[in-house]
Length: 353
Image 1 (cartoon, one colour):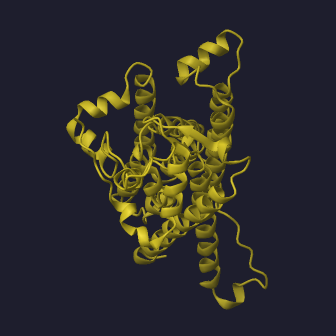
Image 2 (tube, rainbow, N blue to C red):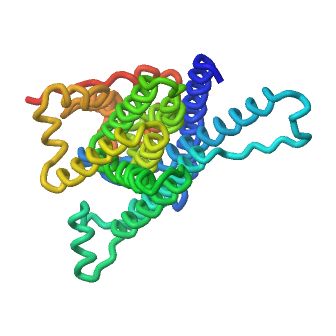
Image 3 (cartoon, rainbow, N blue to C red):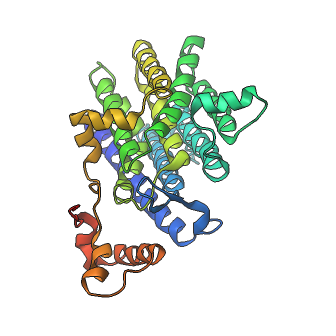
């Protein structure tokens, strides 16, 4: 497949992943497993958000990856000379496609466990490992062990020498854990994922003979994440452990496939350094204190102290302000109506006295 065809295939993969993620999110919001309350959490503003974005982004990313692999395999078979074509064409997934799929599903599965059964009493590596030292097995500890197993399985599927397997396992497990540490503000984890995907794609393009390998590897997770970015920025949903772990694991698997050993070792060292630093330093405070990072972090978000149009209309019309849950239902109705196009893109900011 030539460069232009690979570029088009990557764009198609990203688009498929985004469409599937949006469709899955809509279906899950309408028919939430276990009821909407099971997936409802309170964000940094004290407002309710849903964790259903996580399973939806995983569905989009994995589906996009599988469809892309199937299409690529069929194109390869159809391009073979006629006598070599089998009567029944099988479309197996490649080792890298399997690695990405296992990484995404494993990250999401163990993330859902922590989302639905986890406790806020124990946080971070130190909290969970400290609990384990006292004989307490938290869901966070189970998740960490599960991510390690997921990373090893994906690395073995990717193949390579023992050193490569060790590095790749660390990329998958470490990437899953690290991206989850950024899911503390609207859109932040998805923006970090997009930057990571851009770096993987760019580094592989810069290498001779890379054939856009990195771009093809990150197309599905990046497309799914960007497809649900508006919901995240509008503070209606968040990735949660399921979505952040899945995206981080898939990006780790993409890096394992696309980058040379030296670059992979450097990325793994960076992941370890940031993870250790997160035990002592608040990423949110560092971002807020760094103007360029703060600008990027706030890009597309509601400013502090702002209200949406749905919040202000009842107050301006003289009617009693509805309760929090009624406001969320009103927003849900308006988000489905084309006549409220401006609601998707504009917020009304209230000046603090």
